[in-house]
Length: 284
Image (cartoon, rainbow, N blue to C red; front, side):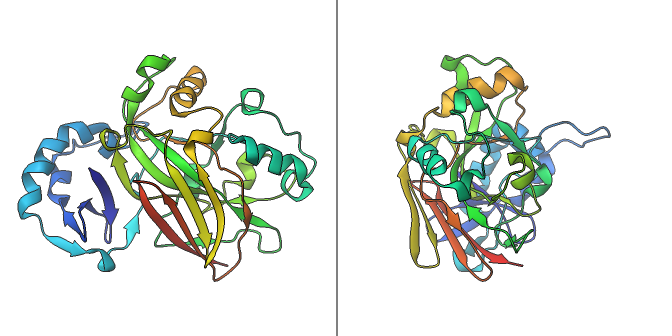
Protein backbone atom coordinates (compact mmCIF):
# COMPACT_ATOMS: atom_id res chain seq x y z
CA UNK A 1 0.00 0.00 0.00
CA UNK A 2 1.12 3.56 -0.71
CA UNK A 3 0.35 5.80 2.28
CA UNK A 4 0.59 9.57 1.89
CA UNK A 5 0.00 12.85 3.68
CA UNK A 6 -1.40 15.48 1.36
CA UNK A 7 -3.01 18.91 1.11
CA UNK A 8 -4.17 20.09 4.55
CA UNK A 9 -2.53 17.22 6.46
CA UNK A 10 -4.95 14.65 5.10
CA UNK A 11 -4.09 10.94 5.14
CA UNK A 12 -4.47 9.06 1.89
CA UNK A 13 -3.85 5.88 -0.05
CA UNK A 14 -2.42 6.37 -3.54
CA UNK A 15 -4.35 4.53 -6.25
CA UNK A 16 -3.82 4.65 -10.04
CA UNK A 17 -4.93 8.21 -10.81
CA UNK A 18 -6.15 9.48 -7.46
CA UNK A 19 -5.64 9.54 -3.72
CA UNK A 20 -8.30 7.94 -1.53
CA UNK A 21 -8.84 10.12 1.54
CA UNK A 22 -8.82 7.88 4.63
CA UNK A 23 -8.19 10.65 7.16
CA UNK A 24 -11.01 9.25 9.28
CA UNK A 25 -8.64 6.63 10.72
CA UNK A 26 -6.55 9.34 12.40
CA UNK A 27 -9.29 9.61 15.04
CA UNK A 28 -8.31 6.10 16.16
CA UNK A 29 -4.81 7.16 17.16
CA UNK A 30 -4.39 7.25 20.95
CA UNK A 31 -4.24 10.58 22.76
CA UNK A 32 -0.73 11.71 23.66
CA UNK A 33 0.44 13.44 26.82
CA UNK A 34 3.61 15.27 27.72
CA UNK A 35 6.36 14.12 27.53
CA UNK A 36 5.67 12.93 24.00
CA UNK A 37 7.16 9.60 22.82
CA UNK A 38 10.31 9.56 20.69
CA UNK A 39 8.49 8.13 17.69
CA UNK A 40 6.03 8.96 14.94
CA UNK A 41 2.53 8.21 16.19
CA UNK A 42 1.09 7.22 12.80
CA UNK A 43 3.95 4.88 11.88
CA UNK A 44 3.86 3.28 15.35
CA UNK A 45 0.17 2.39 14.99
CA UNK A 46 0.01 1.83 11.22
CA UNK A 47 -0.29 -1.99 11.49
CA UNK A 48 -3.33 -1.55 13.77
CA UNK A 49 -4.91 0.98 11.40
CA UNK A 50 -4.46 -1.05 8.20
CA UNK A 51 -7.64 -3.17 8.57
CA UNK A 52 -9.73 -0.02 9.04
CA UNK A 53 -8.02 1.66 6.07
CA UNK A 54 -8.89 -1.35 3.92
CA UNK A 55 -12.52 -1.12 5.06
CA UNK A 56 -12.70 2.59 4.18
CA UNK A 57 -11.06 2.36 0.76
CA UNK A 58 -14.07 1.37 -1.40
CA UNK A 59 -16.11 4.43 -0.33
CA UNK A 60 -13.29 6.86 0.47
CA UNK A 61 -13.45 10.22 -1.37
CA UNK A 62 -11.05 10.42 -4.32
CA UNK A 63 -8.76 13.37 -4.99
CA UNK A 64 -7.22 13.51 -8.51
CA UNK A 65 -3.43 13.35 -8.45
CA UNK A 66 -3.11 16.73 -10.17
CA UNK A 67 -4.89 18.34 -7.19
CA UNK A 68 -2.56 16.80 -4.60
CA UNK A 69 0.15 18.67 -2.71
CA UNK A 70 2.52 16.10 -1.28
CA UNK A 71 3.49 16.33 2.39
CA UNK A 72 6.20 14.30 4.10
CA UNK A 73 4.66 10.84 4.69
CA UNK A 74 6.41 10.75 8.07
CA UNK A 75 5.58 13.90 10.00
CA UNK A 76 7.57 13.40 13.21
CA UNK A 77 10.62 11.16 12.84
CA UNK A 78 12.44 10.68 16.13
CA UNK A 79 15.77 10.87 14.30
CA UNK A 80 17.14 11.04 10.79
CA UNK A 81 20.12 8.75 10.30
CA UNK A 82 22.24 8.95 7.15
CA UNK A 83 24.94 6.84 5.51
CA UNK A 84 27.90 8.61 3.84
CA UNK A 85 29.70 7.36 0.72
CA UNK A 86 27.71 4.12 0.52
CA UNK A 87 28.17 3.61 -3.25
CA UNK A 88 31.63 2.72 -4.60
CA UNK A 89 31.42 5.00 -7.64
CA UNK A 90 30.30 7.92 -5.48
CA UNK A 91 33.23 7.27 -3.14
CA UNK A 92 35.62 7.57 -6.09
CA UNK A 93 33.74 10.62 -7.34
CA UNK A 94 34.25 12.37 -4.00
CA UNK A 95 37.89 11.35 -3.69
CA UNK A 96 38.64 12.64 -7.20
CA UNK A 97 36.97 16.06 -6.86
CA UNK A 98 38.26 18.55 -4.30
CA UNK A 99 35.03 20.55 -4.71
CA UNK A 100 33.25 17.60 -3.13
CA UNK A 101 35.62 16.66 -0.31
CA UNK A 102 37.13 20.10 0.52
CA UNK A 103 40.15 18.37 2.10
CA UNK A 104 37.93 16.51 4.57
CA UNK A 105 39.11 12.99 5.34
CA UNK A 106 36.98 10.57 3.32
CA UNK A 107 36.66 7.04 4.68
CA UNK A 108 34.83 3.92 3.60
CA UNK A 109 31.45 3.78 5.32
CA UNK A 110 32.59 0.96 7.59
CA UNK A 111 35.14 3.39 9.08
CA UNK A 112 33.27 6.65 8.64
CA UNK A 113 30.14 5.32 10.35
CA UNK A 114 26.77 7.03 10.17
CA UNK A 115 25.70 10.59 10.97
CA UNK A 116 22.55 12.43 12.00
CA UNK A 117 20.61 15.16 10.22
CA UNK A 118 18.52 17.60 12.25
CA UNK A 119 14.81 16.74 12.36
CA UNK A 120 14.09 20.40 11.68
CA UNK A 121 15.62 20.00 8.20
CA UNK A 122 12.64 17.88 7.07
CA UNK A 123 10.27 19.74 4.77
CA UNK A 124 7.26 18.85 2.61
CA UNK A 125 7.99 18.44 -1.09
CA UNK A 126 5.32 21.04 -1.92
CA UNK A 127 7.22 23.66 0.11
CA UNK A 128 10.50 23.28 -1.78
CA UNK A 129 14.17 23.75 -0.94
CA UNK A 130 15.32 27.14 0.32
CA UNK A 131 19.05 27.66 -0.19
CA UNK A 132 20.72 28.38 3.14
CA UNK A 133 24.05 29.68 1.80
CA UNK A 134 23.30 30.95 -1.73
CA UNK A 135 26.92 31.97 -2.27
CA UNK A 136 28.18 28.41 -1.72
CA UNK A 137 27.81 25.28 -3.81
CA UNK A 138 24.78 23.23 -2.77
CA UNK A 139 24.25 19.74 -4.24
CA UNK A 140 21.41 17.27 -4.76
CA UNK A 141 21.67 13.66 -3.54
CA UNK A 142 18.96 11.10 -4.31
CA UNK A 143 18.66 8.29 -1.74
CA UNK A 144 16.55 5.29 -0.86
CA UNK A 145 15.03 5.96 2.57
CA UNK A 146 14.13 3.26 5.09
CA UNK A 147 11.25 4.04 7.45
CA UNK A 148 11.54 2.08 10.68
CA UNK A 149 8.29 0.51 11.87
CA UNK A 150 9.26 -1.40 15.02
CA UNK A 151 11.41 -0.50 18.01
CA UNK A 152 14.74 -2.31 18.11
CA UNK A 153 18.26 -2.26 19.53
CA UNK A 154 21.16 -4.49 18.50
CA UNK A 155 19.00 -5.95 15.75
CA UNK A 156 20.24 -9.14 14.09
CA UNK A 157 20.58 -9.33 10.30
CA UNK A 158 17.94 -12.05 10.01
CA UNK A 159 15.41 -9.81 11.77
CA UNK A 160 16.33 -6.47 10.19
CA UNK A 161 13.69 -6.28 7.47
CA UNK A 162 10.95 -7.11 9.99
CA UNK A 163 11.65 -3.70 11.55
CA UNK A 164 10.85 -1.82 8.31
CA UNK A 165 7.48 -0.08 7.88
CA UNK A 166 8.27 0.92 4.31
CA UNK A 167 10.41 2.93 1.93
CA UNK A 168 10.44 6.41 0.38
CA UNK A 169 12.37 8.39 -2.17
CA UNK A 170 14.70 10.80 -0.38
CA UNK A 171 16.61 13.98 -1.18
CA UNK A 172 19.62 14.79 0.99
CA UNK A 173 20.58 18.38 0.13
CA UNK A 174 24.19 19.24 0.91
CA UNK A 175 26.27 22.40 1.23
CA UNK A 176 29.83 21.70 0.11
CA UNK A 177 32.55 22.86 2.45
CA UNK A 178 34.95 21.91 5.26
CA UNK A 179 32.39 21.64 8.07
CA UNK A 180 31.05 18.39 9.51
CA UNK A 181 28.39 16.61 7.43
CA UNK A 182 25.66 17.04 10.03
CA UNK A 183 25.98 20.82 9.89
CA UNK A 184 26.13 21.09 6.09
CA UNK A 185 23.17 18.76 5.58
CA UNK A 186 20.86 20.05 8.32
CA UNK A 187 19.64 23.53 7.29
CA UNK A 188 15.87 23.96 7.12
CA UNK A 189 14.38 22.26 4.02
CA UNK A 190 17.50 20.16 3.29
CA UNK A 191 15.74 16.84 3.91
CA UNK A 192 12.80 15.63 1.81
CA UNK A 193 11.05 12.27 1.60
CA UNK A 194 8.06 11.08 -0.40
CA UNK A 195 6.02 11.34 -2.38
CA UNK A 196 4.45 8.62 -0.23
CA UNK A 197 5.42 5.68 1.99
CA UNK A 198 5.39 2.37 0.11
CA UNK A 199 4.81 -0.34 2.69
CA UNK A 200 7.49 -3.01 3.02
CA UNK A 201 5.28 -5.81 1.70
CA UNK A 202 5.29 -4.11 -1.71
CA UNK A 203 9.11 -3.88 -1.80
CA UNK A 204 10.41 -7.44 -1.41
CA UNK A 205 13.84 -6.55 -2.84
CA UNK A 206 14.94 -3.05 -1.72
CA UNK A 207 18.41 -3.86 -3.03
CA UNK A 208 17.14 -4.22 -6.59
CA UNK A 209 15.68 -0.82 -7.45
CA UNK A 210 16.63 1.57 -10.26
CA UNK A 211 16.96 5.23 -9.30
CA UNK A 212 17.24 8.44 -11.33
CA UNK A 213 17.45 12.14 -10.59
CA UNK A 214 16.85 14.97 -13.04
CA UNK A 215 17.49 18.67 -12.56
CA UNK A 216 15.10 20.39 -14.96
CA UNK A 217 15.59 18.29 -18.13
CA UNK A 218 19.13 17.12 -17.34
CA UNK A 219 19.68 13.59 -16.06
CA UNK A 220 22.25 13.82 -13.26
CA UNK A 221 22.08 10.55 -11.30
CA UNK A 222 21.25 7.16 -12.80
CA UNK A 223 22.08 4.16 -10.62
CA UNK A 224 20.74 1.09 -8.83
CA UNK A 225 20.40 0.11 -5.18
CA UNK A 226 22.21 -3.15 -5.98
CA UNK A 227 25.37 -0.98 -5.93
CA UNK A 228 24.99 -0.14 -2.22
CA UNK A 229 28.10 -1.05 -0.20
CA UNK A 230 26.02 -1.68 2.92
CA UNK A 231 22.52 -2.83 2.01
CA UNK A 232 19.26 -2.18 3.84
CA UNK A 233 19.61 -5.00 6.38
CA UNK A 234 23.26 -4.16 7.07
CA UNK A 235 22.46 -0.49 7.65
CA UNK A 236 19.68 -1.35 10.11
CA UNK A 237 22.05 -3.66 12.00
CA UNK A 238 24.81 -1.01 11.97
CA UNK A 239 22.52 1.81 13.13
CA UNK A 240 20.91 -0.28 15.87
CA UNK A 241 24.32 -0.99 17.42
CA UNK A 242 24.54 2.72 18.30
CA UNK A 243 20.91 3.87 18.53
CA UNK A 244 17.64 2.39 19.67
CA UNK A 245 15.50 2.57 16.54
CA UNK A 246 11.92 3.80 16.98
CA UNK A 247 8.89 3.76 14.67
CA UNK A 248 9.19 6.65 12.24
CA UNK A 249 12.99 6.89 12.39
CA UNK A 250 14.43 7.47 8.92
CA UNK A 251 17.60 5.91 7.51
CA UNK A 252 18.97 7.59 4.38
CA UNK A 253 20.98 4.84 2.70
CA UNK A 254 23.46 6.98 0.76
CA UNK A 255 23.63 8.56 -2.67
CA UNK A 256 25.16 7.17 -5.87
CA UNK A 257 27.48 8.92 -8.31
CA UNK A 258 26.40 11.98 -10.25
CA UNK A 259 25.87 14.55 -7.50
CA UNK A 260 25.86 18.13 -8.72
CA UNK A 261 24.96 21.72 -7.89
CA UNK A 262 21.44 23.15 -7.76
CA UNK A 263 20.28 26.74 -8.05
CA UNK A 264 17.22 28.95 -7.66
CA UNK A 265 14.29 28.15 -9.93
CA UNK A 266 15.40 24.64 -10.78
CA UNK A 267 13.10 21.64 -10.46
CA UNK A 268 14.34 18.34 -9.02
CA UNK A 269 12.70 15.03 -9.96
CA UNK A 270 13.94 12.06 -7.95
CA UNK A 271 12.52 8.68 -8.94
CA UNK A 272 13.06 5.20 -7.49
CA UNK A 273 11.55 2.14 -9.11
CA UNK A 274 8.25 1.22 -7.45
CA UNK A 275 8.40 4.11 -4.97
CA UNK A 276 7.25 7.01 -7.13
CA UNK A 277 8.73 10.37 -8.11
CA UNK A 278 9.57 13.05 -5.58
CA UNK A 279 9.43 16.48 -7.25
CA UNK A 280 10.34 19.80 -5.69
CA UNK A 281 11.71 23.24 -6.56
CA UNK A 282 14.70 25.28 -5.41
CA UNK A 283 14.31 28.82 -4.13
CA UNK A 284 16.34 31.40 -2.20
